[in-house]
Image (cartoon, rainbow, N blue to C red; front, side, top):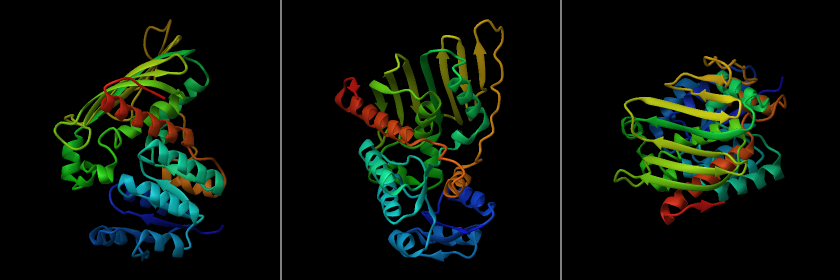
Length: 328
């Protein structure tokens, strides 16, 4: 089997989980890395092994003879690095959020149509068995017509960022936004991945907690499919917890990756039932990238999810900024 050569743009944080997953796959080799921080590179190379260190992202993409690249850079750098990779024929795995606004999402969509390259996003929940079980129930219409969705994601985000010294997340120049754009992207993507709903109007309220980026966000959404919903993304919590609840005419699903139980409760049943687990074809975003490059599957996250996440996020910020309901 042909060896698949992978490079890394940015090697902090989640890059190590991607690295470990890639190293566990036969005929995959991590061959190059670029990160402007010398200490990040030195630490990464110790675990990655024999990899070449490049002096720029362009040099890695153009001279690394890559099949794929893993992008772990600050959020606002994602789009130019995605563009660089796709225009040079390199497949992409990018950490969340894939892009920081809808305009960037549309540009990436055009590039993907032109280049036909693989585009995988690091949304881990889309590979987890309880979420895939919930998706199967929803895809099979076992809840009937959907009528209401709600949920939250909350974590001690401010202190996590400070303690991990990833304080670029507090600077809009690099982050593109706060908790909504960062961890909140996982939640919003999960909503669209499971339901396929299409937002049409949003009203939002944001608490910046005297910081430059949003910390706590509440928003109400009207969907094209005659579903309504209310949500919260919080950057304050003693720990980490999340839950998404989806009501249909035949019951309700509650699904969570962290801190809450998951279940499905049908009308006529006295007690909720566990969500049947469904195993993913690829157990991680890194494994997904390789399977897609080999042509054995399509990316786990459809690009329309990336588009909807970017569009809804844009409209949430617009609604708060203009102090009125934002239409799509």
